[in-house]
Length: 435
Image (cartoon, rainbow, N blue to C red; front, side, top):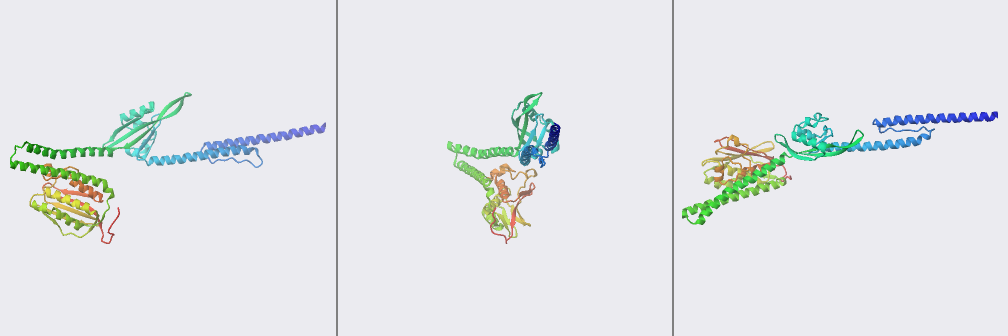
């Protein structure tokens, strides 16, 4: 009996010891698990649990936790990578992007939006949109999109010279208020600068209007004189005069159409220009030969000053057209007995060409506009000489396509100096360069 009681006590003691050890192990595991979970929740996603060699019961818990922690770590790494890519894409977009939370506060804006609205980043974050965008129409549209999820698109003039297209895209999100699920909206605002498009549209509209106006005058003259001739009640002298006028107006229309086609061709091919080494003096000689007769008939002398032989990087045909247009323009605006001089200055890497005349000159207020299409300093004089108003515009387009600059210096009654620049080539450089 004594031995039985001793064995029973010993068994109870062993069981108690095992139970105590197991409780301590479980307590240790719980403490380690709690500590590890707190570490993960604080952002330490590389936290791992390790079982003691003598406690196999911990292995399953540790393995499950480590698998979970590894999954969380990979998920957050992927999210961080996607966030960085998204941030990089947004910051390099040409479209302005502004994200507004459902409470109307700005959460994020990219650099393009900052540039368009002229506001640094610190003036965006967590600001109510009414304090950021001082525009009633835009503010009202944002509130409407936040409350009702209504899309909105419109163009706004933010400041002088800057017109933007703004699109509001509502994003429905779930929100819980008083244990009740509600649908609210964040708003993504996309902003695109359309100033250049609108400017080009205005230019296109003005161009069509100008062409129509320029064609209307000769057409009306041709029609009027033709109707008079058809009536038959004109003498021979008047008949000859009317036919001469019809012929001159038809030439003017032909010149206008030719210049329009030339300008259109230049605009379509200027990116494919292949400049080569061109002898500048040789091109000028060809131009002088072609206009010499016209200049002689008007009693105007055209001379090439003593200049240095130089080669330029250009297209010979296009360069010839530049000289012909500038010389013809100078002849039209120079009186009989005038003089036109062609010369150039050889600079370090450029050649500056001058076409100077002793003509009527250009008023100061017109100097910045003479290269515009259809702009004429003296409209009646230009039309009488057969000018189309496109010659100087063609000059500017060609010189720009060749990588040069163009300008004019003049005073009313003092003559004009039209100049342009070209890249200079050394005689030792290859004959042909590819653009």
